[in-house]
Length: 246
Image (cartoon, rainbow, N blue to C red; front, side, top):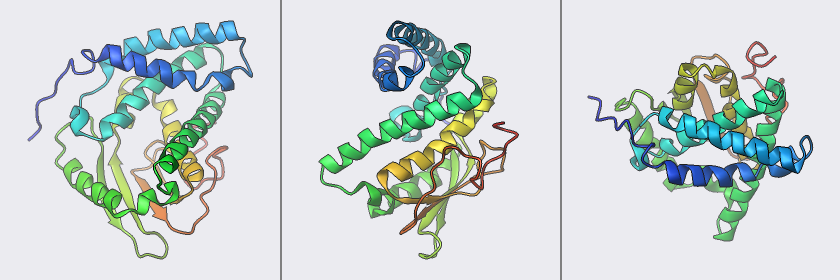
């Protein structure tokens, strides 16, 4: 049985969300400097903030802080504001995809340093027992379908050779809400960003299909001693569909 959906959950948290968003987009400043003047970048950032403020009421409630996938959903919706404004500035879909991949490289580099700072090896986090146990638990919870806009996934046990373990995502929260908001063309950017994370943090990751590129599921696989391919340009990846990203 579905649980209660709090419709104004994110509206009540708008001040914090806007503050977090300002920090988020600031990371993109050096990338944008290649194309825009400092004054224009400030204008673009202001437009992005206005756009994100409009988007906040559209963020679906999937359990708030009790659901770890809420973080992914908030991130996806905040980036929708970025994509929309860059598109208004004349960037093509490919331009925006390339921008976002580089943006994720920067964010993942920051994350890598923070993991190393606490004495952990970022290349091993997907293989740590605690993380694998977390994945198993939340895959089971996802199958309850408590929230219609949530992710739904199976945990897949590996053979220790071709891969250690993986997710089969049958439903994706970002995919659902972006389709509803007529922003489906941007969904593959988030799929490709998984390769940025694996490359920067240094773990093996492979995939043959994604919901974002029109497949029936996303088959994430975590692989030890494997060199993850770079996700941009994406044309040679098995999951890529040129009809989704000409």
